[in-house]
Amino acid sequence: MNMIQPITSADKTFVALRDDIVEGRIQAGSKLSETELSTKYAVSRAVIREAINRLESCHIVERKANVGARVVALSPQGLIELYQVRESLEGMAARLAAKNMTDDEIADLNHLLQSHFDEVKGGESYYQEAGDVDFHYRIILGSKNKHLISMLFDGIYHLVRMYRVQLGMAGPRVTTAYDEHKHIVQAILNRDAELAEMLMRRHIMYSKNNIEHKLS
Image (cartoon, rainbow, N blue to C red; front, top):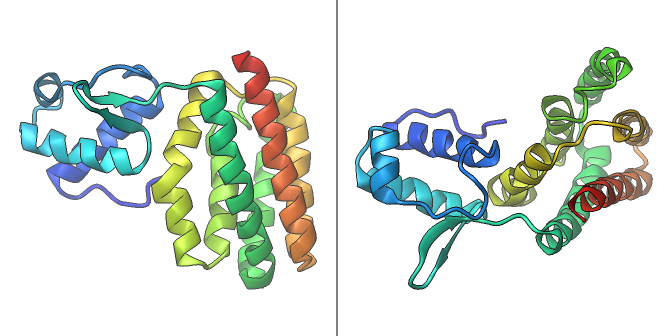
């Protein structure tokens, strides 16, 4: 789910480092050494420094005085705060999508959901990553609000993915998540902005409860 297509070596390094952090190949909470990373990715320390700065604005890296840069640690409290923001912003996105998405975009969203149905029957992969992220991605874009899109994609989405990828989302949540998606699309199709917002907020709250349960 890249908003930027990596072009320069700095972009490529940023995307590679970001993915390694999100996927857990570089552990949550670990210290980031510019020297080690410049060797690992075969780029200059200046390129690594720039990538680390950009990751800080994605909220998956933090700097502390006398410690330097480290990957954020995942915690129940961090999850709750993140999902409170996500619930509010994505609820707003769903409300705006019900007003602003074109009929063709809604038809595409419906089509996306149909194509997910086979995966859901298998019970495993749907809620894991791509299917769910793609669904939310389309609705956020469908809000047509540049500030909101930027706050979600550039601001918190990679941290959201980090919690989800590393804490696993398979299991009984799979089919219920799919049903929730179906109801959200129906509300958008009916242009019922209030209902779309309420259903999206509830959907994200259920996700939070599910991950929180695994964390505790």
